Length: 446
Image (cartoon, rainbow, N blue to C red; front, top):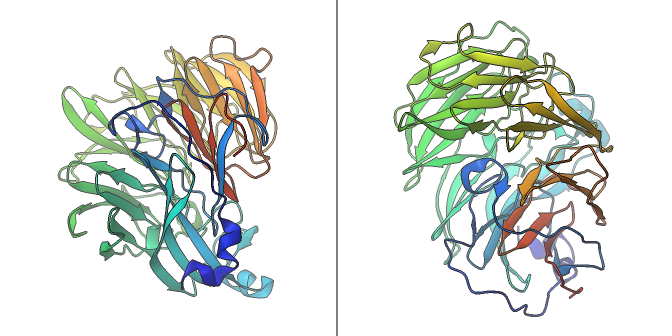
């Protein structure tokens, strides 16, 4: 199916006039994965502070379909994924709901795309069909069929849609180089993003029916290793699933890839899939937040049911549940948004919009700020400012040094925000449910 058949394609594209920007190398203009370089939602360059639909918008481009993948950037190209759906009836959706989900949506038929946008003008340059799916499973209404964020590197885009497929795309020609598929039941749709390590893509496959981590080669999609997750106490398939994105860290000069899941956090050798260490965190499941790490300590949230934030030393071997957990905090633990590190603090944002600062050494609560509204997108730290993105289209900007005070800014856009942004060349690329915005200080509406 071509996107022009999904509606009036010309009405879906908002173009912008050319914007003069400072010269920078492609290496500097890179936001390669979910939460940016290093995967922890931090940027050392300037980012816009205030904006609205009529202020500081360089361009705004309508994105066809629906998806919550974050934009990734290399040079002058921005990429994301989207899903074009043929809607099912309410009765059809109810018949396909799995597990304990009561708030679900369903597509009768599905087309999954990679969308490429010119970073300078906002022109939509590419709309490449990757997969056609007949009779997909129902998803949670807060999810989409295109939620995992792709990975960009020179000449290649790697897209992962959970059980609906994995592929590599030549970003110059638009050719799909290979396709593959992992078989699992998500129950509420795909969620975790892939992570790249060397010539491998590492995929979290924590389904309701099977739980494992796998690595496939970037060159051809062939599987290199597959490692089963630790045994689970739970017998209900609905509480075995999880959706966390892995994080690659370095410990004593050697890389590890850490992957939270139901009941366990596990670290693996990214080259072989060998399990290095594990921590039992209790009954938590449906873990979405990506971990963060600093100074040999990993901080992560444990999902639903037994929701907590854990701090764990990363230098262990085997089961370190009794030896390497430094602290745990239970109040307002996030289910969706990933933690953020600022100075010596760990910042979390709950689904209900309560931001909390925890002492990284002790877990003691340092401050608490009610933002309000539903929160799913992971926060961002830029130049001492914390950006918190709400379902209602509002972005609240806090001073990281005095976060409990009045916000520096509260910015509103006409859309729903559930995807984390990218920041390059002092501009923010922020996706809503209908459009991609390029936000830059001093820009007028184009």
